[in-house]
Length: 388
Image (cartoon, rainbow, N blue to C red; front, side):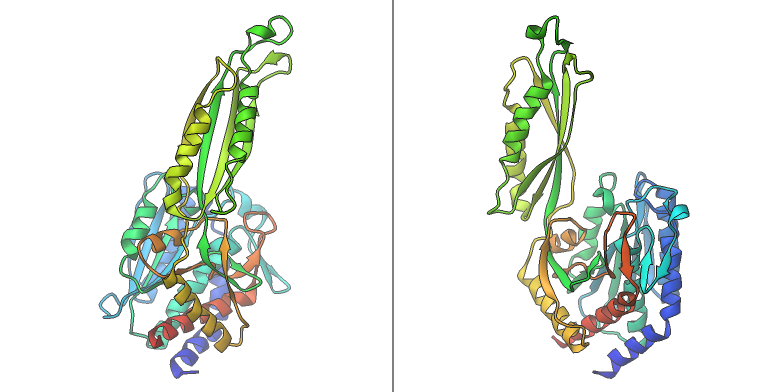
């Protein structure tokens, strides 16, 4: 192992307690996606950490979402930059921290966002610090963190900002949830949500059922049509996950609604998905009913690319060099901001954060030792990137 890696690893080993303290601090800061004040407080704290290591930082203000932060070290370096990507918001409502603060038991950490993805942020910050301590000076190191990933940036321009800031980079590492089986994500499905609302004619089910127009019957037929749009060959799945309708059992229902979750692998498929959904909405089974459709923006897919596979091979070699085993490349169904660095033409790998499981649940957990392991892995990957 070269001396630069040894110096970086030594720095991380010497700052384990400091890393744990920052992890605890960030987890114990409420930052649910709807709580802008809390997310912005996390943003300010991370800015302090970045500035303390000489990074030039910018906070991008969002009116209706948590702010973004961008921090860069060595912007004047000649080689293309390396990106550290992630998000600061969690899915948990205000009050969760009071009931479930950060804690460690038997080598496992618990708390809201401990895995998704405050542990990953700490690992990335200390990989940057470790590289600085090892006098790494080949490539600019640029961190980009969003404040509203969990709600797909519906009230911000964070996706466009990711792409603009990423262009020209040599590589991007996203610090989403790491897998306990050492999978590294090289592709993710995109998400699209559609709401279909049916208006019928509500009447008394006993006195004049012939004059009613059942919105539930109409929507039931649409559910079958939409579910049957799933195409396993292209990896496109349609799921009617929410259904609502009617008010009382003795009335023909005058309204009903469904929400459809669509997952897809290639951005080029989205226009066809929209066409299929509009066609399903337009088809009428119960005369006298009307259907409206609305799309709720989702996260674009992280398309698997040759560049991403090459970057994964560097991660794999580094894993093996460090004696961590052999990781494997994985495609997953959940979206992440790694999609936008890929769309900007940057080789990207995802799920480089701390390892654990049960994201978004009260049982969310992270393996403590993986915090240090992943910080070292990233530092070593960046040094090995130069060797390639």
